[in-house]
Image 1 (cartoon, rainbow, N blue to C red):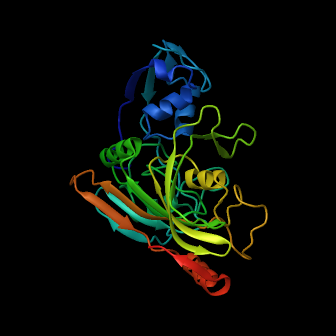
Image 2 (tube, rainbow, N blue to C red):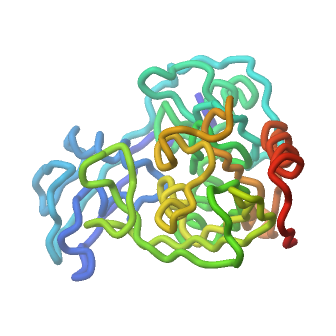
Length: 321
Protein backbone atom coordinates (compact mmCIF):
# COMPACT_ATOMS: atom_id res chain seq x y z
CA UNK A 1 0.00 0.00 0.00
CA UNK A 2 1.17 3.52 -0.71
CA UNK A 3 1.76 5.76 2.26
CA UNK A 4 -0.89 8.23 3.38
CA UNK A 5 -3.68 6.40 1.54
CA UNK A 6 -7.04 7.33 3.03
CA UNK A 7 -8.94 4.56 4.79
CA UNK A 8 -12.23 6.45 4.82
CA UNK A 9 -14.18 8.34 2.20
CA UNK A 10 -13.42 12.01 1.67
CA UNK A 11 -16.53 14.16 1.60
CA UNK A 12 -16.97 17.58 -0.01
CA UNK A 13 -19.96 19.93 -0.29
CA UNK A 14 -20.14 22.79 -2.78
CA UNK A 15 -22.77 25.46 -3.42
CA UNK A 16 -23.09 26.77 -6.99
CA UNK A 17 -22.60 30.54 -7.25
CA UNK A 18 -24.35 32.77 -9.81
CA UNK A 19 -21.16 32.95 -11.91
CA UNK A 20 -20.92 29.15 -12.02
CA UNK A 21 -24.53 28.50 -13.04
CA UNK A 22 -24.83 26.81 -16.42
CA UNK A 23 -21.53 24.89 -16.21
CA UNK A 24 -21.43 21.13 -16.78
CA UNK A 25 -21.30 19.19 -13.51
CA UNK A 26 -17.98 17.51 -14.38
CA UNK A 27 -16.45 20.86 -15.35
CA UNK A 28 -17.72 22.49 -12.14
CA UNK A 29 -16.16 19.75 -10.01
CA UNK A 30 -12.93 19.86 -12.00
CA UNK A 31 -12.55 23.51 -10.99
CA UNK A 32 -13.46 22.81 -7.35
CA UNK A 33 -11.26 19.72 -6.98
CA UNK A 34 -8.25 20.41 -9.18
CA UNK A 35 -6.12 17.74 -7.52
CA UNK A 36 -8.35 15.14 -9.20
CA UNK A 37 -8.49 14.48 -12.94
CA UNK A 38 -11.67 15.24 -14.83
CA UNK A 39 -11.99 11.61 -16.00
CA UNK A 40 -11.73 10.43 -12.37
CA UNK A 41 -14.52 12.84 -11.35
CA UNK A 42 -16.68 11.72 -14.28
CA UNK A 43 -16.33 8.13 -13.07
CA UNK A 44 -17.40 9.19 -9.57
CA UNK A 45 -20.48 10.91 -11.01
CA UNK A 46 -21.44 7.85 -13.07
CA UNK A 47 -20.95 5.60 -10.03
CA UNK A 48 -23.39 7.68 -7.96
CA UNK A 49 -20.76 9.17 -5.65
CA UNK A 50 -21.89 12.70 -6.58
CA UNK A 51 -25.33 14.11 -5.86
CA UNK A 52 -27.01 17.35 -6.89
CA UNK A 53 -29.58 18.45 -4.34
CA UNK A 54 -29.66 14.92 -3.01
CA UNK A 55 -30.09 13.19 -6.37
CA UNK A 56 -27.63 11.37 -8.61
CA UNK A 57 -26.78 13.06 -11.90
CA UNK A 58 -24.87 12.73 -15.16
CA UNK A 59 -21.51 14.39 -15.92
CA UNK A 60 -23.09 16.69 -18.51
CA UNK A 61 -25.82 18.07 -16.21
CA UNK A 62 -25.90 21.88 -16.24
CA UNK A 63 -25.71 23.09 -12.64
CA UNK A 64 -27.98 25.90 -11.43
CA UNK A 65 -27.43 28.72 -8.96
CA UNK A 66 -27.63 27.54 -5.31
CA UNK A 67 -27.46 23.84 -6.24
CA UNK A 68 -25.83 21.78 -3.48
CA UNK A 69 -23.21 19.41 -4.88
CA UNK A 70 -22.09 16.60 -2.57
CA UNK A 71 -19.08 14.43 -3.40
CA UNK A 72 -17.86 11.25 -1.71
CA UNK A 73 -14.41 10.10 -2.81
CA UNK A 74 -13.61 6.50 -1.85
CA UNK A 75 -10.11 5.39 -0.81
CA UNK A 76 -7.94 4.32 -3.75
CA UNK A 77 -8.22 0.74 -4.97
CA UNK A 78 -5.24 -1.60 -4.62
CA UNK A 79 -2.66 -0.72 -7.25
CA UNK A 80 -2.66 -3.08 -10.25
CA UNK A 81 -0.18 -1.28 -12.53
CA UNK A 82 3.17 -3.07 -12.62
CA UNK A 83 6.45 -1.36 -11.69
CA UNK A 84 9.01 -1.34 -14.50
CA UNK A 85 12.74 -0.73 -14.30
CA UNK A 86 12.77 2.22 -16.68
CA UNK A 87 15.59 4.77 -16.15
CA UNK A 88 14.47 8.19 -14.88
CA UNK A 89 16.26 11.50 -15.42
CA UNK A 90 15.76 12.88 -11.90
CA UNK A 91 16.23 16.64 -11.54
CA UNK A 92 15.26 16.85 -7.84
CA UNK A 93 14.07 14.45 -5.14
CA UNK A 94 13.25 14.48 -1.43
CA UNK A 95 10.68 12.87 0.88
CA UNK A 96 7.80 14.92 -0.60
CA UNK A 97 8.57 15.48 -4.26
CA UNK A 98 10.38 14.07 -7.22
CA UNK A 99 10.88 16.22 -10.33
CA UNK A 100 11.84 14.35 -13.48
CA UNK A 101 12.91 15.32 -16.99
CA UNK A 102 10.39 13.39 -19.11
CA UNK A 103 11.69 12.17 -22.47
CA UNK A 104 9.90 12.52 -25.80
CA UNK A 105 7.49 9.71 -26.58
CA UNK A 106 6.82 8.69 -22.96
CA UNK A 107 3.19 8.68 -21.85
CA UNK A 108 2.75 10.08 -18.32
CA UNK A 109 0.15 7.66 -16.95
CA UNK A 110 -1.45 4.39 -18.09
CA UNK A 111 -4.50 4.60 -20.33
CA UNK A 112 -6.12 2.56 -23.07
CA UNK A 113 -3.33 1.24 -25.27
CA UNK A 114 -0.58 2.36 -22.88
CA UNK A 115 -0.48 0.14 -19.79
CA UNK A 116 3.28 -0.28 -19.75
CA UNK A 117 6.30 1.87 -20.48
CA UNK A 118 4.69 4.93 -18.90
CA UNK A 119 6.19 7.36 -16.42
CA UNK A 120 3.94 5.87 -13.71
CA UNK A 121 5.38 2.38 -14.34
CA UNK A 122 8.87 3.83 -13.90
CA UNK A 123 7.90 5.78 -10.77
CA UNK A 124 6.39 2.71 -9.11
CA UNK A 125 9.71 0.91 -9.52
CA UNK A 126 11.78 3.86 -8.29
CA UNK A 127 9.54 5.11 -5.45
CA UNK A 128 7.99 1.77 -4.45
CA UNK A 129 5.32 2.59 -1.81
CA UNK A 130 6.07 6.33 -1.70
CA UNK A 131 3.56 7.98 -4.04
CA UNK A 132 0.40 9.93 -3.26
CA UNK A 133 -2.87 8.02 -3.60
CA UNK A 134 -4.86 10.97 -4.91
CA UNK A 135 -6.18 10.55 -8.49
CA UNK A 136 -6.60 6.77 -8.15
CA UNK A 137 -4.71 3.69 -9.20
CA UNK A 138 -3.72 4.82 -12.69
CA UNK A 139 -2.17 8.13 -11.67
CA UNK A 140 -0.35 7.70 -8.33
CA UNK A 141 1.65 10.82 -7.54
CA UNK A 142 0.57 12.59 -10.73
CA UNK A 143 -0.53 16.14 -9.96
CA UNK A 144 -0.13 17.55 -13.48
CA UNK A 145 1.00 16.22 -16.84
CA UNK A 146 2.63 17.11 -20.14
CA UNK A 147 1.89 15.62 -23.54
CA UNK A 148 3.58 12.43 -24.77
CA UNK A 149 5.78 14.28 -27.27
CA UNK A 150 6.54 17.23 -24.96
CA UNK A 151 9.76 16.84 -22.99
CA UNK A 152 10.89 18.36 -19.74
CA UNK A 153 10.21 18.95 -16.07
CA UNK A 154 7.30 17.28 -14.31
CA UNK A 155 6.43 17.29 -10.59
CA UNK A 156 5.40 14.03 -8.88
CA UNK A 157 4.14 13.97 -5.29
CA UNK A 158 5.17 11.27 -2.84
CA UNK A 159 2.39 11.77 -0.30
CA UNK A 160 -1.12 13.17 -0.18
CA UNK A 161 -0.18 16.27 1.84
CA UNK A 162 2.38 17.30 -0.77
CA UNK A 163 -0.11 16.51 -3.54
CA UNK A 164 -2.74 18.82 -2.07
CA UNK A 165 -0.21 21.60 -1.51
CA UNK A 166 1.09 21.46 -5.08
CA UNK A 167 -2.44 21.14 -6.50
CA UNK A 168 -3.45 24.29 -4.61
CA UNK A 169 -0.55 26.19 -6.21
CA UNK A 170 -1.57 24.91 -9.64
CA UNK A 171 -5.12 26.09 -9.01
CA UNK A 172 -3.86 29.52 -7.97
CA UNK A 173 -1.56 29.65 -11.05
CA UNK A 174 1.36 30.48 -8.78
CA UNK A 175 3.77 27.82 -10.09
CA UNK A 176 6.48 29.09 -12.44
CA UNK A 177 6.33 27.24 -15.77
CA UNK A 178 8.62 28.22 -18.64
CA UNK A 179 8.76 26.29 -21.90
CA UNK A 180 11.06 26.41 -24.92
CA UNK A 181 9.61 25.93 -28.39
CA UNK A 182 10.44 26.33 -32.06
CA UNK A 183 7.50 27.74 -34.00
CA UNK A 184 6.68 28.32 -37.66
CA UNK A 185 7.28 31.79 -39.07
CA UNK A 186 9.32 34.73 -37.85
CA UNK A 187 8.38 36.47 -34.60
CA UNK A 188 10.12 39.81 -34.19
CA UNK A 189 8.83 40.95 -30.79
CA UNK A 190 7.56 39.61 -27.51
CA UNK A 191 3.86 39.30 -26.80
CA UNK A 192 1.02 37.92 -24.70
CA UNK A 193 -1.84 35.73 -25.88
CA UNK A 194 -4.98 36.06 -23.76
CA UNK A 195 -7.63 33.77 -25.25
CA UNK A 196 -9.93 31.28 -23.53
CA UNK A 197 -9.38 27.60 -24.41
CA UNK A 198 -12.03 24.90 -24.59
CA UNK A 199 -12.91 21.67 -26.35
CA UNK A 200 -13.14 21.99 -30.14
CA UNK A 201 -16.85 21.81 -31.08
CA UNK A 202 -16.29 19.32 -33.94
CA UNK A 203 -12.95 17.60 -33.19
CA UNK A 204 -13.42 16.51 -29.60
CA UNK A 205 -9.82 15.39 -29.10
CA UNK A 206 -8.60 18.90 -29.92
CA UNK A 207 -8.77 22.20 -28.09
CA UNK A 208 -9.52 25.61 -29.58
CA UNK A 209 -9.61 29.28 -28.61
CA UNK A 210 -12.73 31.34 -27.99
CA UNK A 211 -15.21 28.44 -27.99
CA UNK A 212 -18.29 28.00 -25.85
CA UNK A 213 -17.37 26.91 -22.33
CA UNK A 214 -13.70 27.82 -22.76
CA UNK A 215 -11.58 28.68 -19.73
CA UNK A 216 -9.39 31.76 -19.35
CA UNK A 217 -5.84 31.17 -20.60
CA UNK A 218 -2.78 33.44 -20.75
CA UNK A 219 0.57 32.72 -22.41
CA UNK A 220 3.52 35.12 -22.54
CA UNK A 221 6.10 34.52 -25.28
CA UNK A 222 9.64 35.87 -25.66
CA UNK A 223 11.68 35.67 -28.85
CA UNK A 224 15.07 34.03 -28.33
CA UNK A 225 16.35 33.43 -31.89
CA UNK A 226 14.85 34.22 -35.27
CA UNK A 227 15.60 32.12 -38.38
CA UNK A 228 14.46 32.47 -41.97
CA UNK A 229 11.35 30.29 -41.52
CA UNK A 230 11.15 29.60 -37.78
CA UNK A 231 11.54 31.28 -34.39
CA UNK A 232 12.95 29.87 -31.17
CA UNK A 233 10.89 31.20 -28.25
CA UNK A 234 10.34 30.93 -24.52
CA UNK A 235 6.75 30.71 -23.28
CA UNK A 236 5.68 31.40 -19.71
CA UNK A 237 2.28 30.16 -18.60
CA UNK A 238 -0.05 32.08 -16.33
CA UNK A 239 -2.62 29.30 -16.65
CA UNK A 240 -2.29 25.60 -17.42
CA UNK A 241 -4.96 24.58 -19.91
CA UNK A 242 -4.78 21.45 -22.03
CA UNK A 243 -2.48 22.00 -25.06
CA UNK A 244 -2.28 25.68 -24.06
CA UNK A 245 0.96 26.68 -25.81
CA UNK A 246 0.19 24.60 -28.90
CA UNK A 247 -3.32 26.07 -29.27
CA UNK A 248 -2.30 29.64 -28.46
CA UNK A 249 0.63 29.69 -30.88
CA UNK A 250 -1.57 28.26 -33.64
CA UNK A 251 -4.15 30.98 -32.94
CA UNK A 252 -1.64 33.71 -33.87
CA UNK A 253 -0.36 31.91 -36.95
CA UNK A 254 2.81 30.43 -35.42
CA UNK A 255 2.10 26.74 -34.65
CA UNK A 256 4.78 24.72 -32.90
CA UNK A 257 7.16 23.01 -35.31
CA UNK A 258 6.41 19.28 -35.60
CA UNK A 259 2.94 19.55 -34.04
CA UNK A 260 0.96 16.82 -35.78
CA UNK A 261 -2.39 18.10 -34.45
CA UNK A 262 -2.24 21.89 -34.63
CA UNK A 263 0.52 22.41 -37.19
CA UNK A 264 0.72 21.98 -40.99
CA UNK A 265 -0.18 18.55 -42.36
CA UNK A 266 3.36 18.09 -43.67
CA UNK A 267 6.32 18.75 -41.37
CA UNK A 268 9.12 20.66 -43.15
CA UNK A 269 11.83 18.93 -41.07
CA UNK A 270 12.40 15.36 -42.21
CA UNK A 271 12.43 12.78 -39.43
CA UNK A 272 11.05 15.09 -36.73
CA UNK A 273 8.55 13.25 -34.54
CA UNK A 274 6.12 15.34 -32.53
CA UNK A 275 6.19 18.95 -31.45
CA UNK A 276 9.39 20.81 -30.52
CA UNK A 277 8.15 21.81 -27.08
CA UNK A 278 10.15 21.47 -23.86
CA UNK A 279 9.09 22.22 -20.27
CA UNK A 280 12.40 23.76 -19.21
CA UNK A 281 11.78 25.53 -15.89
CA UNK A 282 9.40 24.75 -13.05
CA UNK A 283 9.27 26.57 -9.73
CA UNK A 284 7.05 26.20 -6.68
CA UNK A 285 6.81 26.72 -2.94
CA UNK A 286 8.02 23.51 -1.32
CA UNK A 287 5.10 21.89 0.54
CA UNK A 288 7.14 21.23 3.70
CA UNK A 289 9.93 23.81 3.90
CA UNK A 290 7.86 26.70 2.55
CA UNK A 291 10.87 27.83 0.50
CA UNK A 292 10.84 28.54 -3.22
CA UNK A 293 12.23 25.66 -5.28
CA UNK A 294 13.10 26.07 -8.97
CA UNK A 295 14.40 23.31 -11.23
CA UNK A 296 15.57 23.47 -14.85
CA UNK A 297 15.54 20.61 -17.35
CA UNK A 298 18.23 20.92 -20.05
CA UNK A 299 17.12 20.84 -23.66
CA UNK A 300 17.00 17.31 -25.09
CA UNK A 301 19.62 16.30 -27.63
CA UNK A 302 17.23 16.31 -30.60
CA UNK A 303 16.21 19.90 -29.78
CA UNK A 304 19.83 21.10 -29.50
CA UNK A 305 20.71 19.35 -32.77
CA UNK A 306 17.76 20.97 -34.52
CA UNK A 307 18.81 24.42 -33.31
CA UNK A 308 22.34 23.77 -34.59
CA UNK A 309 20.93 22.76 -37.98
CA UNK A 310 18.74 25.85 -38.21
CA UNK A 311 21.64 28.10 -37.30
CA UNK A 312 23.94 26.60 -39.91
CA UNK A 313 21.57 25.94 -42.82
CA UNK A 314 18.83 28.54 -42.58
CA UNK A 315 20.91 31.44 -41.38
CA UNK A 316 20.57 33.19 -38.06
CA UNK A 317 18.88 36.58 -38.47
CA UNK A 318 18.74 37.81 -34.92
CA UNK A 319 19.45 36.78 -31.33
CA UNK A 320 17.67 38.12 -28.25
CA UNK A 321 18.62 36.82 -24.79
